[in-house]
Length: 172
Image 1 (cartoon, rainbow, N blue to C red):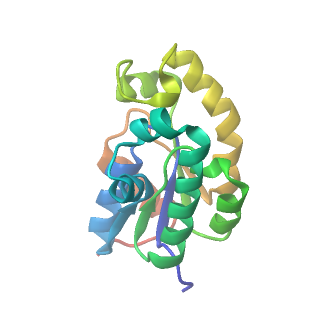
Image 2: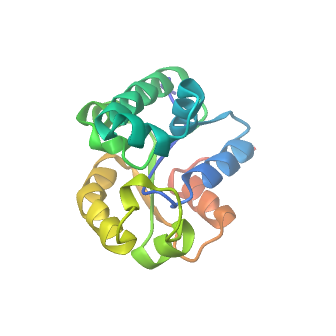
């Protein structure tokens, strides 16, 4: 077995990466790590505040560094922020790793993320902006993923089991 995360979860905001990641880690008996949480802890402020105060390019650099550190130093379940795959270097780091793309359609995204959530990239016309984000990101998620798991109308437990099955991992 190669070093690095046992499972890496990618996908859009609201797809369940954090919830499913924690469930997977518990089932596999390994630690869980979320690069967005790493950034918040290191910066001492929320991601939405980083976007407002410093801008998206600054945040993306923090994200790139957080992902590189996590891929190099974490052997459990790792969840990446929704935009992490935008960086070509990050996509290269994910090559060959057991990456699961948690997908969902726009209606499911609206139900989960909501229209009033603090999501800096969805501040105006969330449905249209989500569709546009996904048009740009879906090919990147698919590029890095070993498996794609649809999350629509599934419980987090069902999604976690689907990831385990798709990656042929056995829970403890």
